[in-house]
Image 1 (tube, rainbow, N blue to C red):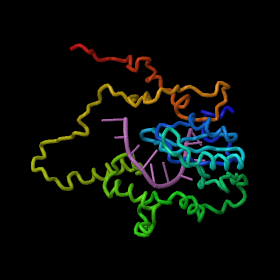
Image 2 (image 1 turned 135 degrees about the vertical axis):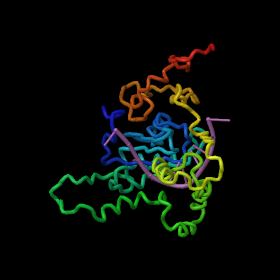
Image 3 (image 1 turned 180 degrees about the vertical axis):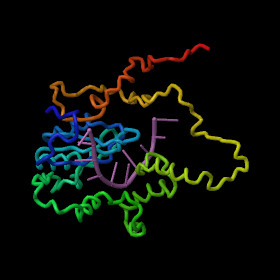
Length: 267
DNA sequence: GTTGAGCGTT
């Protein structure tokens, strides 16, 4: 009840998690809620977003209270065109916290009894966690084995090519080793200085001095969607960082123009 | 402004 918009998972026990893929990047939980709620009782909807940009990743998680309803939703909403894009609804295979999921049902498997086996510090348990996580994110594995895929791999290959061994162009799923890489670079001040004129320091990347930055530039004005809850009841299982989670009073300008205009537009 | 394989939050 009061968990929505407060903290992590409110109560994910005996609930069925549905994974919705192929959704547009602008589709929000509010849009999926009425869609999934029509087929059953939706307990909660969660749409993972990027940590850097904060944009939707393109998939959402819908939690149902009953399996029959979830299955129905999967059968009915699976392949449905939402926002002009065909979405893919299926049972979640992995868990948010390495929880045991059976047929999409989340089973509570928390080690309540601490005095059960305190001896076990680290063992295969880690393998389990890393197992579902290293499904393909880790490219440091046998890649040649993956190439044996068929159509499914072909999709990923497409992306792989885009990513290429080089940097990720767009919002690649690369890790947060950006800072780490910088450190590496620091080690070698100039690994291959091609310019015989080290005097020139053309830093187009850093050519932007700390001036009046506007991080709130990414206004969601793309879609005239009211950021308020769709449930006037006050109880909306739809949790999204668009309401109370991100209380940024900076982009509240009614005109879309920040009132903090320290600069003088004139001269 | 863009993108499109996939599996999650304090």
